[in-house]
Amino acid sequence: MIMKILKYGAPELRVQSERVTSFDDELKKIVVDMFETMYSSPGIGLAAPQVGINLQLSTIDLSVGADEGKRIVLCNPEIVSSEGSQRGDEGCLSIPDFSESVTRPLKVVVRGQGIDGEELRIEAEGLLARCLCHEIDHLNGILFIDHLSSLKRTLIKNRIRKLVKAGDW
Image (cartoon, rainbow, N blue to C red; front, side, top):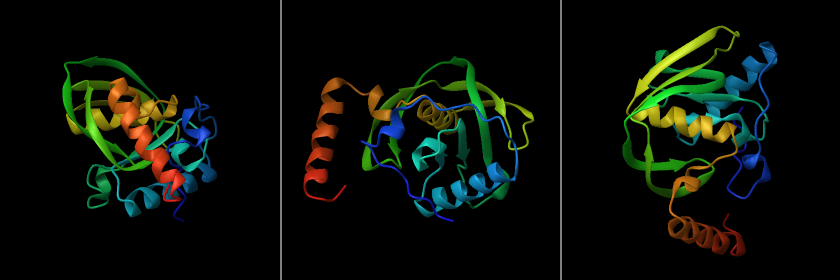
């Protein structure tokens, strides 16, 4: 089932998410729906808060559904180390049609749990490192625009206010 993706301004996007404690069929159903929602958008990552679910859960697939083996499900993730830096365009399904250059670590090591509660350790670099950081930010109530200069952030917020006022947001 395709879920509604919350847009910038929804208070659920600014909340610290709760840890996943039940690795059950309900969680598996949420993950299936999140992948379907992510692919329909289309996107390469989706965090549970973006669909109104207050859990530390995210789905990632850099292949956008082209390779089922590339799917990543992360519960309760945390970045345990990072190194280097990369700057590149970043967008967000909760802030559609906006993108800006954001600096992120070049490499990260992330620890978390999989869909069955098994321990996971992911070493990533480049786009996957960027995506992991972006999704983990969502679980902590942080959006990519929070990494922008106050001027760029204000410009985007002003454009969104105009869209809201026009009924287009």
